[in-house]
Length: 229
Length: 229
DNA sequence: CACATGCTTCGATTAGGATCGAAGTATGAA
DNA sequence: TTCATACTTCGATCCTAATCGAAGCATGTG
Image (cartoon, protein in one colour):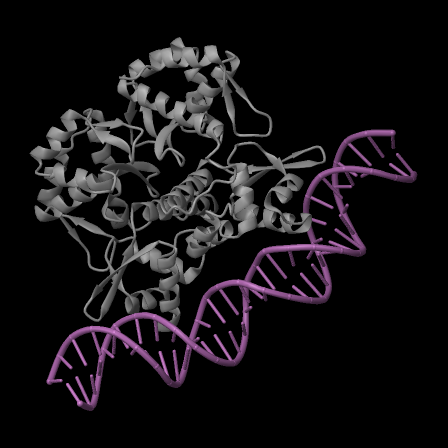
């Protein structure tokens, strides 16, 4: 009657403070080494190693060997969905002060979430896309899809939809922003948009941080591109 | 300065097997007494009592006193969202390991998920609503909203939208179905629809089970009401 | 008023696991 | 080859918390 690994085991994996710190550090989407994660979690290297192997056994982490480094990252969107849900719950109960602090105005304004844009601007983009009828619900992976008009818009913006649709990853996903309590666009399109903004010089990622800097011209262009009301 | 929103604390609460059993038992939406939950979790009464007060302190459970009984229920949709995300993750991991054939066909077809309909039929309903342009994305709570046409459809079906919109709970939400790996409709509307199906005699819930039985006429009516293609 | 039922609190026991340092292994650099 | 870096494994310690039974409290019923 039981299906798969237990919920309790999974939750217990996330339930240790050191492991939770590691996982939230990995929410940035960057792959980190064992040493970095040990520091992030505030534990010794041997302890971190033990935690990392447990997280891997539980299927929460993926490992990539590169030279003498071992890079760890979240194993997939399912994992970040759980973490996001937990963050949402924690935020709702007022227990939350995010690690890096959502008080930081720069973080509130624009930051990276996993691999896509989050914050005020991301919510605005989501609203604009919705308002213009570019997004529709679907039962398939991700729960969202581009309408024909939406596809045209993305193509115009030089987003390569063909290669995105080939990827196993869902193209459109709504991601709940725990500082805003509103949704923004995640999934392949979300990542592609951020990437494109960076290519155009509109956005620049601060080193070793989740903060995204938007240039003055970038901001103007984005507001034009994603009008509201 | 304590950065302790602790998603770790929350996850640890769910991470104990006894507590996880209690929470999943409460996913049915029914309120249960301490004794029932103790039996459900397979622990003694005193142990259960301890767990329940911890869950309450953590804000995961709500309590309603009624005579000499104390009824416990999940404190809100945030909590069930976390549990659903964990179930999804667990199902995904289990799927990779043991491809143990199809589950109980009755469960695949139609079952209750928290308080709304899940399974084949629920996915079809979601698809039909989408296809007819009744659902649209939004950045606010739940990520989905009814379009004007969708609201008209629901009113026609005698769903009381006014009272639903007053509730704190998001009206529309996509819920990922772990057997189908597709989305179906959750939130206030999802619950209201199932309730309406039951009132009309189209659906009947099997006692102490998640299985929903659809009557022959109910099935016919539902297929008419939610056409595809 | 008793008396039963439902649940909580207390105290003691026990098991699991988080932690660290030291020693061992693998991989790249010199 | 030799050394250094990055990480894992091992062994020992320590501490949290899960558990149960018994006693205490609360709220109903007779």
